Image (cartoon, rainbow, N blue to C red; front, side):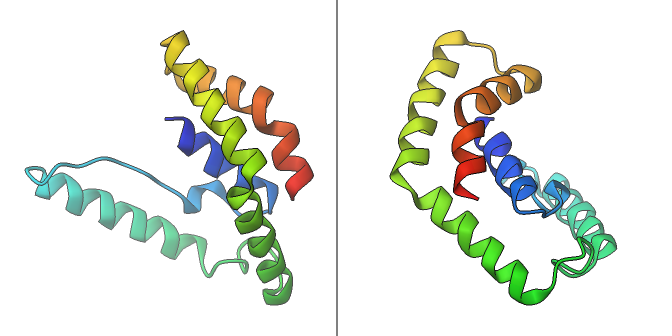
Length: 116
C-alpha cells in the first residue's frame, strides 16, 4: 500500500524509526490474528523505547520535527501529488513493495525532503 511507503518515508525524513509504524488489516472475524498483531507491535515499540530517546533526539527537537511532518502531510502539494501518484499506481496494477517504493520515491521524494 502506497500510504505505508509515504508514512515510512516521512518518519525516516524526521529521524524516527519506521519500525514505529505498522498498518495491518484484520477483520472482525480474525480476533486471534488481531490480538497477535497488537501483541507483537506492542513488544516492538516497548523494545524501541520512548519516542525520540531511541533515535537520540531531544524532546524539543522531536516536537519541531513532528510539527514539520504534520505540516508536510497536511500540505496541498503533497496531498495532490500523492493523489495523482496513487492513480498512476492503480493504472500500473503493480502493488509490489519494490514498485511502490520506487514510484513514491520518484514522485514524492523531493517534496518530502523539501518539506522537512
